[in-house]
Length: 336
Ligand code: G3I
Image (cartoon, rainbow, N blue to C red; front, side, top):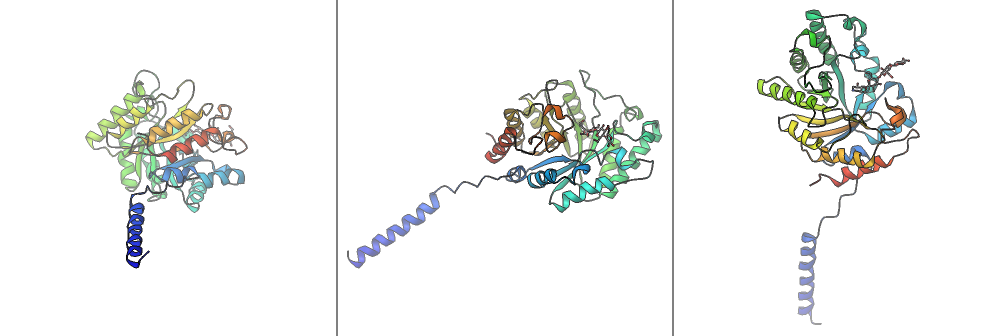
């Protein structure tokens, strides 16, 4: 082969190489191997409820430290835990969880500031304007302690009634006046402008349910009137009494269209069907404003409903089929 031909062939091969490099599909992203990393690929988080009493259990912290990148205190930031005596705040266990989370590179969802349940005795016995002021003082006290440190607060938890009314749940807080929820949100915005402010509830996942519509109407009203609200948390405790329904995606889309983030905040599924877990994950991935998923515990033995075996790890810390289905759904990205 003459020099000229050799140069022509070499040039052609060079051009071909460049062309091939430009047109070949990019190598597939390596699949992430933990829930948190897999969710992070789409800018989302994957969290878990953490109990302070288990932070000394290495089988527990090994899984929690590895898999999750968002933490919710299961009980330790609630009213009875943080203000056991009126005006005296106690953050011992809440800080244990907060510090563990931050030291392990995780963000924290705050749960919860105003709720009819898990009130300390002193608060249960209050009513009227005294209770309203105590609620406001509580929000200010807790949010000041964590100012600038909490990704999102469940400002108000479970304020709507179950059943077909679509109305508010009766409670001592509700009896202070229907505006107690917006009072809580306005207080929270001033107390920590950096935190996202969420309304959180259960049995609001099924779009056809009256409770879902009641909360939807409240959020729409708040957005219209400029009451500060940034997000809605769908607890997603699915079981035979409140089963998963595929219209959950419609619910998430409809709330997001009001201009709030949506999140799955306390997920557990009776029996832990791998298919249902994957469907819930895909529902979140399908909604750009669905910012993340939190499961309500680590192993089945950590669940508030251990008999339902509703979580992603069994009591021995082994990954269940539902774990794999969630991980695969997260790695597959947005469903079309
Ligand atoms: O800490 C005491 C312990 O000292 C005592 O020996 C023991 C005996 O019953 O009780 C322990 O407290 C329990 C606490 O969990 C810690 O385990 C309470 O009785 C028990 O009522 C409490 O249950 C929690 C429940 O909220 C209370 O409403 C669950 O752990 C917690 O998972 C659950 O979480 C709620 C969310 O906050 C809101 N959405 C529903 C979700 C599930 O119910």
